[in-house]
Length: 269
Image (cartoon, rainbow, N blue to C red; front, side):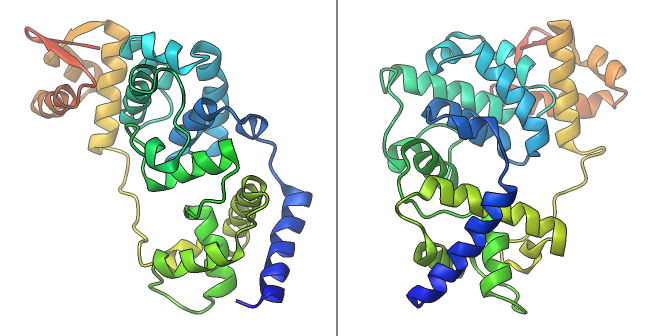
């Protein structure tokens, strides 16, 4: 891209951010642990649902060490309402790794951050950019929306590899933290104004129906166990009004994943 085209694009993004930029709690910190919590919570969950949980979570577990010391049941109890309980378990495991393997010091490079449980390529680089202001190149749904809209008009089946080339070329290396905030807010705005451009991505998939899905049943089982402390599959089935065979199958999967424990014929968390 020509320098003037990069400058023009950056002006569009920054102009929108100056006028419509969102005031989000995790943008008021450079604490990498706090940013890790926000990034994990924001995976597949709307911002409005995350804000109160993020605030409560960090009030309860102020440091990675405090989170590591807490029992998983308490973490999952606080996680209720966010969905995808495995994220809460991964965050708990990440806190343990930071505390024990990294001796309480949050890792400084994306490669080391990516070793944390539940942290992938995107999340590691987002944490690095937002906590340390490093000019990492990464993509997520709102960022992808911006680039598909501006640089891939009337095209479909576009790979992230193609998009990442433009992200790298237009990256504001002096202030990547603010640049990515601007891209994300602009992408969120574009989704509302012109629809979901991600449908033109080669990586686009529709989310499966939640009602009646295993995701819903997993959440109901964990919520019930947290409420009852110790409970049989038969009682769970009665409480959530699902077939006992299905409850047993899903519960055993949760046991294998380490989200719940089975003692005798009862499940505990």
